[in-house]
Length: 387
Picture (cartoon, rainbow, N blue to C red):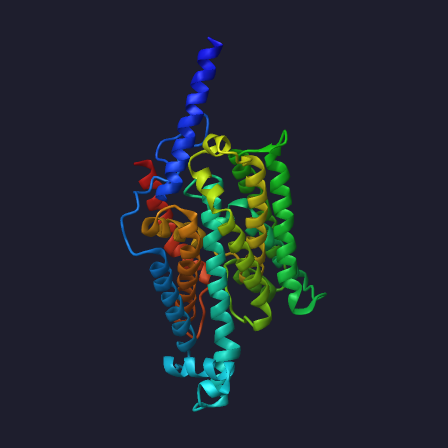
Protein backbone atom coordinates (compact mmCIF):
# COMPACT_ATOMS: atom_id res chain seq x y z
CA UNK A 1 0.00 0.00 0.00
CA UNK A 2 2.89 2.37 0.85
CA UNK A 3 4.62 1.63 -2.47
CA UNK A 4 1.41 2.43 -4.36
CA UNK A 5 1.04 5.72 -2.47
CA UNK A 6 4.66 6.71 -3.18
CA UNK A 7 4.20 5.86 -6.85
CA UNK A 8 1.07 8.00 -6.99
CA UNK A 9 2.91 10.95 -5.40
CA UNK A 10 5.82 10.59 -7.79
CA UNK A 11 3.46 10.50 -10.75
CA UNK A 12 1.69 13.63 -9.46
CA UNK A 13 4.99 15.47 -9.07
CA UNK A 14 6.01 14.48 -12.59
CA UNK A 15 2.73 15.71 -14.02
CA UNK A 16 3.07 18.96 -12.03
CA UNK A 17 6.54 19.48 -13.46
CA UNK A 18 5.22 18.89 -16.96
CA UNK A 19 2.43 21.41 -16.32
CA UNK A 20 4.98 23.99 -15.14
CA UNK A 21 7.18 23.43 -18.17
CA UNK A 22 4.24 23.77 -20.52
CA UNK A 23 3.08 26.92 -18.78
CA UNK A 24 6.49 28.54 -19.12
CA UNK A 25 6.96 27.47 -22.72
CA UNK A 26 3.59 28.73 -23.92
CA UNK A 27 3.45 31.85 -21.78
CA UNK A 28 0.23 30.74 -20.06
CA UNK A 29 -0.53 29.39 -16.63
CA UNK A 30 -1.98 25.97 -16.02
CA UNK A 31 -5.74 25.91 -16.15
CA UNK A 32 -6.11 22.97 -13.80
CA UNK A 33 -5.31 23.17 -10.11
CA UNK A 34 -3.01 20.87 -8.21
CA UNK A 35 -4.58 19.07 -5.30
CA UNK A 36 -3.61 20.56 -1.96
CA UNK A 37 -2.59 23.95 -3.34
CA UNK A 38 -4.41 27.19 -4.05
CA UNK A 39 -6.99 27.42 -6.83
CA UNK A 40 -5.49 27.58 -10.29
CA UNK A 41 -4.54 31.03 -11.47
CA UNK A 42 -3.99 31.92 -15.07
CA UNK A 43 -7.25 31.06 -16.81
CA UNK A 44 -6.10 33.23 -19.68
CA UNK A 45 -6.48 32.03 -23.29
CA UNK A 46 -3.38 30.74 -25.02
CA UNK A 47 -1.62 33.68 -26.61
CA UNK A 48 -2.55 34.09 -30.23
CA UNK A 49 0.19 34.65 -32.79
CA UNK A 50 0.99 38.34 -32.90
CA UNK A 51 3.85 40.78 -33.43
CA UNK A 52 7.24 39.76 -31.95
CA UNK A 53 8.22 41.07 -28.54
CA UNK A 54 10.67 43.77 -29.76
CA UNK A 55 7.98 45.24 -32.02
CA UNK A 56 5.39 45.09 -29.24
CA UNK A 57 7.72 46.83 -26.79
CA UNK A 58 8.62 49.43 -29.42
CA UNK A 59 4.93 50.20 -29.97
CA UNK A 60 4.32 50.47 -26.23
CA UNK A 61 7.38 52.71 -25.87
CA UNK A 62 5.99 54.98 -28.60
CA UNK A 63 2.66 55.03 -26.76
CA UNK A 64 4.42 56.01 -23.54
CA UNK A 65 6.39 58.74 -25.35
CA UNK A 66 3.16 60.07 -26.89
CA UNK A 67 1.47 60.23 -23.49
CA UNK A 68 4.49 62.02 -22.01
CA UNK A 69 4.31 64.58 -24.82
CA UNK A 70 0.57 65.00 -24.31
CA UNK A 71 0.96 65.34 -20.54
CA UNK A 72 3.58 68.08 -20.90
CA UNK A 73 1.82 69.94 -23.72
CA UNK A 74 -1.70 70.09 -22.24
CA UNK A 75 -2.49 72.44 -19.40
CA UNK A 76 -3.72 75.91 -18.55
CA UNK A 77 -1.17 77.17 -21.09
CA UNK A 78 -1.21 74.90 -24.13
CA UNK A 79 2.07 74.14 -25.88
CA UNK A 80 2.63 72.63 -29.35
CA UNK A 81 4.12 69.14 -29.27
CA UNK A 82 6.98 70.26 -31.52
CA UNK A 83 7.86 73.06 -29.12
CA UNK A 84 7.88 70.63 -26.18
CA UNK A 85 10.42 68.41 -27.92
CA UNK A 86 12.37 71.45 -29.04
CA UNK A 87 12.71 72.59 -25.43
CA UNK A 88 13.81 69.11 -24.34
CA UNK A 89 16.39 68.82 -27.11
CA UNK A 90 17.66 72.35 -26.45
CA UNK A 91 18.13 71.52 -22.76
CA UNK A 92 20.09 68.36 -23.70
CA UNK A 93 22.34 70.35 -26.06
CA UNK A 94 21.70 73.83 -27.51
CA UNK A 95 22.89 72.70 -30.96
CA UNK A 96 20.03 70.19 -31.24
CA UNK A 97 17.30 72.87 -31.40
CA UNK A 98 17.35 76.63 -31.73
CA UNK A 99 15.48 78.61 -29.06
CA UNK A 100 12.27 80.11 -30.44
CA UNK A 101 10.25 80.19 -27.22
CA UNK A 102 10.08 82.36 -24.14
CA UNK A 103 11.86 81.56 -20.88
CA UNK A 104 8.46 81.20 -19.17
CA UNK A 105 7.47 78.34 -21.46
CA UNK A 106 10.76 76.59 -20.88
CA UNK A 107 10.22 76.87 -17.13
CA UNK A 108 6.70 75.43 -17.48
CA UNK A 109 8.01 72.43 -19.39
CA UNK A 110 11.21 71.68 -17.49
CA UNK A 111 10.35 72.64 -13.92
CA UNK A 112 6.57 72.24 -13.63
CA UNK A 113 5.10 69.65 -15.99
CA UNK A 114 7.94 67.31 -16.97
CA UNK A 115 8.85 66.21 -13.41
CA UNK A 116 5.20 65.46 -12.67
CA UNK A 117 4.66 63.53 -15.90
CA UNK A 118 7.82 61.48 -15.41
CA UNK A 119 6.86 60.69 -11.82
CA UNK A 120 3.44 59.59 -13.08
CA UNK A 121 5.17 57.22 -15.46
CA UNK A 122 7.45 55.86 -12.74
CA UNK A 123 4.55 55.31 -10.33
CA UNK A 124 2.37 53.68 -12.99
CA UNK A 125 5.18 51.38 -14.11
CA UNK A 126 6.09 50.43 -10.56
CA UNK A 127 2.53 49.64 -9.48
CA UNK A 128 1.96 47.57 -12.63
CA UNK A 129 5.04 45.36 -12.27
CA UNK A 130 4.41 44.96 -8.53
CA UNK A 131 0.83 43.91 -9.25
CA UNK A 132 1.96 41.36 -11.81
CA UNK A 133 4.54 39.91 -9.42
CA UNK A 134 2.08 39.74 -6.53
CA UNK A 135 -0.55 37.97 -8.62
CA UNK A 136 2.01 35.30 -9.45
CA UNK A 137 3.31 35.04 -5.88
CA UNK A 138 -0.11 34.53 -4.29
CA UNK A 139 -1.59 32.87 -7.41
CA UNK A 140 -4.64 35.09 -7.24
CA UNK A 141 -5.78 37.29 -10.17
CA UNK A 142 -7.43 39.74 -7.77
CA UNK A 143 -4.21 40.58 -5.92
CA UNK A 144 -3.23 44.25 -5.85
CA UNK A 145 -0.10 46.10 -4.64
CA UNK A 146 -2.16 47.45 -1.76
CA UNK A 147 -2.81 43.89 -0.59
CA UNK A 148 0.02 43.79 1.95
CA UNK A 149 -1.15 46.78 4.00
CA UNK A 150 1.90 48.75 2.88
CA UNK A 151 -0.22 51.62 1.57
CA UNK A 152 -2.08 51.93 4.88
CA UNK A 153 1.19 52.02 6.78
CA UNK A 154 2.46 54.79 4.52
CA UNK A 155 -0.79 56.67 5.06
CA UNK A 156 -0.33 56.61 8.84
CA UNK A 157 3.19 58.00 8.53
CA UNK A 158 2.18 60.73 6.09
CA UNK A 159 -0.94 61.73 8.01
CA UNK A 160 1.05 61.94 11.26
CA UNK A 161 3.53 64.33 9.62
CA UNK A 162 0.74 66.53 8.24
CA UNK A 163 -1.41 66.60 11.37
CA UNK A 164 1.44 67.15 13.84
CA UNK A 165 3.30 69.51 11.46
CA UNK A 166 6.60 67.62 11.59
CA UNK A 167 9.33 69.40 9.61
CA UNK A 168 12.45 67.72 11.00
CA UNK A 169 13.72 66.72 7.53
CA UNK A 170 12.28 69.64 5.58
CA UNK A 171 10.56 68.72 2.29
CA UNK A 172 11.58 65.08 2.80
CA UNK A 173 9.68 64.75 6.08
CA UNK A 174 6.44 63.47 4.52
CA UNK A 175 7.99 60.99 2.02
CA UNK A 176 10.38 59.68 4.69
CA UNK A 177 7.59 59.21 7.25
CA UNK A 178 5.42 57.50 4.63
CA UNK A 179 8.24 55.12 3.74
CA UNK A 180 8.94 54.30 7.39
CA UNK A 181 5.23 53.62 7.92
CA UNK A 182 5.17 51.33 4.88
CA UNK A 183 8.26 49.47 6.11
CA UNK A 184 6.77 49.04 9.59
CA UNK A 185 3.56 47.65 8.07
CA UNK A 186 5.59 45.22 5.96
CA UNK A 187 7.48 43.94 9.01
CA UNK A 188 4.23 43.52 10.95
CA UNK A 189 2.52 41.63 8.13
CA UNK A 190 5.57 39.44 7.55
CA UNK A 191 5.81 38.28 11.18
CA UNK A 192 2.04 37.87 11.51
CA UNK A 193 1.93 35.70 8.39
CA UNK A 194 4.99 33.63 9.26
CA UNK A 195 4.22 30.66 11.48
CA UNK A 196 6.36 27.60 12.06
CA UNK A 197 9.04 28.94 9.73
CA UNK A 198 6.65 29.06 6.76
CA UNK A 199 4.49 31.73 5.24
CA UNK A 200 1.38 30.66 3.35
CA UNK A 201 -0.63 32.73 0.92
CA UNK A 202 -3.79 32.58 3.02
CA UNK A 203 -2.05 33.82 6.18
CA UNK A 204 -0.30 36.55 4.21
CA UNK A 205 -3.54 37.86 2.70
CA UNK A 206 -5.38 37.72 6.02
CA UNK A 207 -2.52 39.45 7.85
CA UNK A 208 -2.31 42.11 5.14
CA UNK A 209 -6.04 42.83 5.17
CA UNK A 210 -6.23 42.94 8.98
CA UNK A 211 -3.16 45.20 9.25
CA UNK A 212 -4.51 47.49 6.53
CA UNK A 213 -7.84 47.87 8.34
CA UNK A 214 -6.18 48.70 11.66
CA UNK A 215 -3.78 51.22 10.11
CA UNK A 216 -6.56 52.84 8.08
CA UNK A 217 -8.50 53.30 11.32
CA UNK A 218 -5.43 54.90 12.94
CA UNK A 219 -5.03 57.31 10.01
CA UNK A 220 -8.73 58.20 10.14
CA UNK A 221 -8.50 58.79 13.90
CA UNK A 222 -5.58 61.19 13.41
CA UNK A 223 -7.55 63.09 10.80
CA UNK A 224 -10.83 63.44 12.72
CA UNK A 225 -9.05 64.51 15.91
CA UNK A 226 -7.10 67.26 14.17
CA UNK A 227 -8.19 70.78 15.07
CA UNK A 228 -6.79 72.37 11.90
CA UNK A 229 -9.14 72.01 8.88
CA UNK A 230 -6.33 72.83 6.45
CA UNK A 231 -4.19 69.99 7.78
CA UNK A 232 -7.18 67.67 7.64
CA UNK A 233 -7.80 68.57 4.00
CA UNK A 234 -4.14 68.08 3.11
CA UNK A 235 -4.07 64.66 4.76
CA UNK A 236 -7.24 63.55 3.00
CA UNK A 237 -5.95 64.66 -0.39
CA UNK A 238 -2.71 62.76 0.17
CA UNK A 239 -4.62 59.60 1.09
CA UNK A 240 -6.63 59.88 -2.14
CA UNK A 241 -3.43 59.95 -4.20
CA UNK A 242 -2.00 62.77 -6.25
CA UNK A 243 1.18 64.14 -7.76
CA UNK A 244 0.65 67.89 -7.47
CA UNK A 245 3.73 69.90 -6.55
CA UNK A 246 6.20 67.31 -7.90
CA UNK A 247 9.77 68.55 -8.29
CA UNK A 248 12.89 66.92 -9.72
CA UNK A 249 14.03 66.16 -6.17
CA UNK A 250 11.15 63.74 -5.63
CA UNK A 251 11.58 61.89 -8.95
CA UNK A 252 15.00 60.27 -8.66
CA UNK A 253 14.55 58.01 -5.63
CA UNK A 254 11.32 56.28 -6.78
CA UNK A 255 12.69 56.09 -10.34
CA UNK A 256 15.82 54.30 -9.11
CA UNK A 257 13.75 51.97 -6.90
CA UNK A 258 11.37 51.04 -9.74
CA UNK A 259 14.18 50.48 -12.25
CA UNK A 260 16.19 48.32 -9.85
CA UNK A 261 13.12 46.38 -8.68
CA UNK A 262 11.92 45.74 -12.23
CA UNK A 263 15.38 44.51 -13.22
CA UNK A 264 15.36 42.05 -10.32
CA UNK A 265 11.86 40.82 -11.21
CA UNK A 266 12.95 40.29 -14.81
CA UNK A 267 15.89 38.28 -13.51
CA UNK A 268 13.54 35.91 -11.65
CA UNK A 269 10.97 35.62 -14.44
CA UNK A 270 11.42 31.85 -14.72
CA UNK A 271 10.61 31.14 -11.04
CA UNK A 272 7.60 33.45 -11.31
CA UNK A 273 6.41 31.46 -14.32
CA UNK A 274 6.82 28.23 -12.35
CA UNK A 275 4.73 29.56 -9.46
CA UNK A 276 1.80 30.09 -11.83
CA UNK A 277 1.57 26.32 -12.26
CA UNK A 278 1.50 25.65 -8.51
CA UNK A 279 3.80 25.24 -5.53
CA UNK A 280 4.29 21.51 -6.05
CA UNK A 281 5.31 22.00 -9.67
CA UNK A 282 7.78 24.74 -8.74
CA UNK A 283 9.23 22.73 -5.85
CA UNK A 284 9.62 19.63 -8.03
CA UNK A 285 11.79 21.70 -10.38
CA UNK A 286 14.12 22.79 -7.57
CA UNK A 287 12.60 26.11 -6.45
CA UNK A 288 12.62 26.86 -2.72
CA UNK A 289 9.11 28.28 -2.85
CA UNK A 290 8.85 29.67 0.69
CA UNK A 291 12.23 31.40 0.67
CA UNK A 292 11.69 32.78 -2.84
CA UNK A 293 8.22 34.03 -1.98
CA UNK A 294 9.41 35.75 1.22
CA UNK A 295 12.26 37.50 -0.61
CA UNK A 296 9.97 38.69 -3.40
CA UNK A 297 7.38 39.97 -0.92
CA UNK A 298 10.06 42.10 0.73
CA UNK A 299 11.23 43.45 -2.64
CA UNK A 300 7.71 44.27 -3.81
CA UNK A 301 6.76 45.89 -0.52
CA UNK A 302 9.89 48.06 -0.58
CA UNK A 303 9.03 49.20 -4.10
CA UNK A 304 5.44 49.95 -3.13
CA UNK A 305 6.54 51.82 -0.01
CA UNK A 306 8.89 54.01 -2.04
CA UNK A 307 6.16 54.72 -4.60
CA UNK A 308 3.39 55.45 -2.10
CA UNK A 309 5.71 57.76 -0.16
CA UNK A 310 5.73 60.24 -3.07
CA UNK A 311 2.34 59.66 -4.70
CA UNK A 312 -0.10 58.75 -1.96
CA UNK A 313 -2.43 55.80 -2.22
CA UNK A 314 -3.29 55.14 -5.89
CA UNK A 315 -5.27 51.95 -6.24
CA UNK A 316 -6.27 49.54 -9.00
CA UNK A 317 -3.40 50.35 -11.40
CA UNK A 318 -1.60 47.22 -10.26
CA UNK A 319 -4.80 45.21 -10.68
CA UNK A 320 -5.83 46.35 -14.17
CA UNK A 321 -2.57 46.52 -16.11
CA UNK A 322 -1.32 42.94 -15.49
CA UNK A 323 -4.58 41.50 -16.84
CA UNK A 324 -4.53 43.74 -19.91
CA UNK A 325 -0.95 42.68 -20.65
CA UNK A 326 -1.73 39.00 -20.18
CA UNK A 327 -4.59 39.27 -22.63
CA UNK A 328 -2.22 40.86 -25.17
CA UNK A 329 1.00 38.89 -24.64
CA UNK A 330 0.28 35.92 -22.39
CA UNK A 331 1.49 35.21 -18.87
CA UNK A 332 5.23 34.70 -19.52
CA UNK A 333 6.85 37.25 -17.21
CA UNK A 334 9.84 37.68 -19.50
CA UNK A 335 7.47 39.31 -21.98
CA UNK A 336 4.78 40.63 -19.67
CA UNK A 337 6.82 42.58 -17.10
CA UNK A 338 8.40 45.16 -19.47
CA UNK A 339 5.08 45.51 -21.32
CA UNK A 340 3.24 46.08 -18.03
CA UNK A 341 5.74 48.77 -17.03
CA UNK A 342 5.27 50.71 -20.27
CA UNK A 343 1.49 50.31 -20.35
CA UNK A 344 1.14 51.22 -16.67
CA UNK A 345 3.23 54.35 -17.17
CA UNK A 346 1.09 55.46 -20.13
CA UNK A 347 -2.16 54.73 -18.25
CA UNK A 348 -1.28 56.75 -15.17
CA UNK A 349 0.02 59.69 -17.22
CA UNK A 350 -3.33 59.85 -19.03
CA UNK A 351 -5.24 59.47 -15.74
CA UNK A 352 -3.25 62.31 -14.17
CA UNK A 353 -3.82 64.49 -17.23
CA UNK A 354 -7.56 63.93 -16.89
CA UNK A 355 -7.36 64.63 -13.15
CA UNK A 356 -5.86 68.07 -13.66
CA UNK A 357 -7.90 69.14 -16.68
CA UNK A 358 -11.46 67.81 -16.23
CA UNK A 359 -12.55 70.51 -13.75
CA UNK A 360 -9.68 72.96 -14.27
CA UNK A 361 -8.52 75.06 -12.40
CA UNK A 362 -9.46 72.57 -9.65
CA UNK A 363 -7.69 69.21 -9.58
CA UNK A 364 -9.18 65.79 -8.90
CA UNK A 365 -6.99 63.39 -6.89
CA UNK A 366 -5.81 60.84 -9.43
CA UNK A 367 -6.62 58.01 -7.03
CA UNK A 368 -10.32 58.81 -7.47
CA UNK A 369 -10.13 58.40 -11.25
CA UNK A 370 -8.18 55.16 -11.08
CA UNK A 371 -10.75 53.82 -8.60
CA UNK A 372 -13.61 54.82 -10.91
CA UNK A 373 -11.95 52.81 -13.69
CA UNK A 374 -10.63 49.99 -11.53
CA UNK A 375 -13.76 49.35 -9.46
CA UNK A 376 -15.96 48.23 -12.37
CA UNK A 377 -13.04 46.24 -13.79
CA UNK A 378 -12.59 44.48 -10.45
CA UNK A 379 -16.29 43.54 -10.33
CA UNK A 380 -16.20 42.30 -13.94
CA UNK A 381 -13.13 40.22 -13.15
CA UNK A 382 -14.81 38.62 -10.13
CA UNK A 383 -17.88 37.72 -12.18
CA UNK A 384 -15.65 36.31 -14.93
CA UNK A 385 -13.78 34.18 -12.42
CA UNK A 386 -17.06 32.98 -10.89
CA UNK A 387 -18.31 31.81 -14.30
